Each structure stands twice: as structure tokens, then as C-alpha cells.
Length: 175
Length: 175
DNA sequence: ATGTGCATGTAACTGGTTACATGATTCG
DNA sequence: CGAATCATGTAACCAGTTACATGCACAT
Image (cartoon, rainbow over all chains, first blue to last red; front, side, top):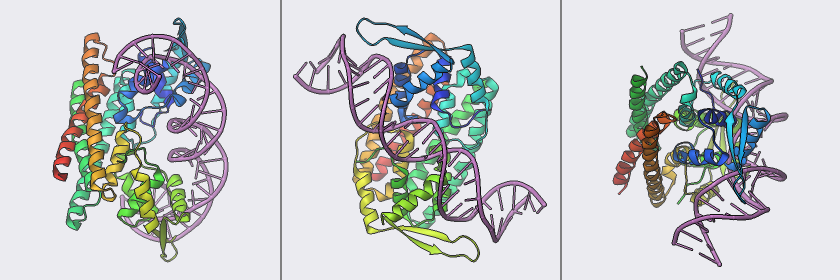
């Protein structure tokens, strides 16, 4: 089980577990998902990498390139792998935002199958529950014909439906 | 135009523009959307309300209830309404996360129709663009048969499709 | 020439979280 | 009888943003 807000440190650690990358690589990858979860700034990215390095959870390979600042490719150490398992394995919160959920999905390769499944099931439960209350909210507002937040609720429902459909499929594939 | 990350202060101001509420009310409402955007803590909610009060952008009506701590219902002042328009009207970023987008949707009643439309169009452009790069990403990974982040990309595509469909509909209704 | 992308980093700040404190009421 | 919900608030802390600094390569 594993669904707490993920700190950028743990997130990076997980990403590097999947494949060695430079800070810039990480940024580029995350930017391609920014419309979903936003992407962290260099001001948090680089210091996080440095911290991981100091704790010896990752190593760098400095690839010099004539003139230009050298590329620094980070890889996870054994200790790093362990640390990630520990950090991602401690679950407390049952209420998770879409952003956090997506972050876990991105790290899914570094998660055990059981953990991933638990994560999906939990999300399913949460979205199902709130979909219902959303539906009630919409009906209530129609009666008041006050239109307030109608758009947001409607959007929420559309996304909820899509997510539940995807979850069903994903869990089937996994089983 | 209006799509920057919204601070909790501005967000609350916008919510109160739609209808007077107490701090707890705000929290409850936001909690019902927490699976989408997460909900702020009391530790940020109450101080924000207090700040708005001090700047006279809102007023309180204290409703005492025997014994219990009194309910405090906040309403926006004229100055508050103006301030909200100003703050939500300054656009700089073109790259917005789903969370920010939903926050604008929640405030859609307090936005001008033109602003709302611009917001939807911008989101459409952004999601369309990144959907394409997502598709490329998926194909590329299948070739490598490395499965890395496959889940996240697949999820992203599903959500993107749903969102675009919703956006089409929403814009039609608006026109 | 001017700007955008590549590539790395630091320092100052601040927005928001965590944890605490308080207390009545209702539900199981 | 304990737990959860209602309802408000404060203080300490820190994770992350903003803004800055540097510099080459490539396209318009």
C-alpha cells in the first residue's frame, strides 16, 4: 500500500529507479505531463538531486561535452532502491488527489504488483464514492436553478466516468 | 484571460463571490472535489480568511449558537469583487495543470463569458498538443517493449480524450 | 541579431502543511 | 463510552517557487 502525497525527492528517486537520467531529462519528461500534474521547477529539481547524492541514494556519471556544461546522469544505488521501497510503502492517507495518483502511476514499474493493485482499487473506491455525491450535487443545483459551480461538477463527472472506465480496464489487464 | 496558478486567497475570494460561506463550509465543499484537486488545510484556510477580512475584501456575520463556537459567515464586499476581477484577470502562463483549470471552472460563475471561453480554448489547445506527444511516447515505448511509464501514458490519453470531448460540448453550450 | 532550447546551478522568499489546542454534539 | 463530525483557531516548519546567473548551439 502506498498513497501519500509524494515528495519531489521520493518521486525523483522512483524515476531514476526506472532509468538513469539527468535533471534536465526529468524536467523534460515531466513537462510532457504538465497539463495533468504540473511540473516542478529547476529550483526544486536540482537541490533534490544534490540531496539524494549526498545521502548516497544515487550516483552521478558526469559526461563532459566540449565547452558546454557537462551532462550529469544520475543512477540509483542499492541503498536508493531500498529507500524508495520504504518511502513508497508507507500508507496513511485514504484521500488522494488526481495528481498524487498519477505520480504513483508513473512510478508503477517500481512498485510491486500487489501495491499497484491496491492503489488502483483504492482510487476506484474513492472516485466511485465522490461521483455519487457529485451527481447528487448536480441534481440539487438544478432544482435551485442557480447554476453555481455547475460547470465544475459536470466536468468532474465526465472525468470520473473516464477514470472509472480506465480503472476497470487496467485492473482487468493486470489480473 | 485568466489562467495562472490561483492562490488560496483569490480562490476563497471567488468562492465567496458566488455565495457567503463559513470557513468550514468552504472546506466541506472543496473536500467533495478532493479526488480531483485536493483540498486545502484549515491551517491555510482560516489565516486566508482573516487576511481577506483585514484588507476589507470580505465581511463576517457572526452567528452565535448557544455554547458552541459561533459560525462565521463571510461575504464579499464591493472592494472584494473588484479585487477578484483584477486578480483573476491577469494572465501570464500558458501552461496550466488540471488542478488550476478545475479551480477556474469552479469560479466560472464569477468570470466573464469571454474570459471563460478563452480559458476553455486555451485548455483545448494545450491538451490537444500534449495528447499528440503522448501518443508518440506510447508508440516509441512499444517499440522498445520496455513498458516504462506505459500505465501513466495510457491513463493520460484516456483522460485527455474525455477532457477534449467535454470541452467540445461545453463550448457548444456556451455558444 | 534575437530568441528558443540545451544544461546547470544558487539564494531569498513564502505559501501552505503539520501538529497542536479547545469543546460541544451526535452516532454507533 | 469512544469515535467521528462540527467548528474555530495558532505557531513552527519546510517544500517548493521565483528570480537570478551563466553560456553554447541552432534556427528565423
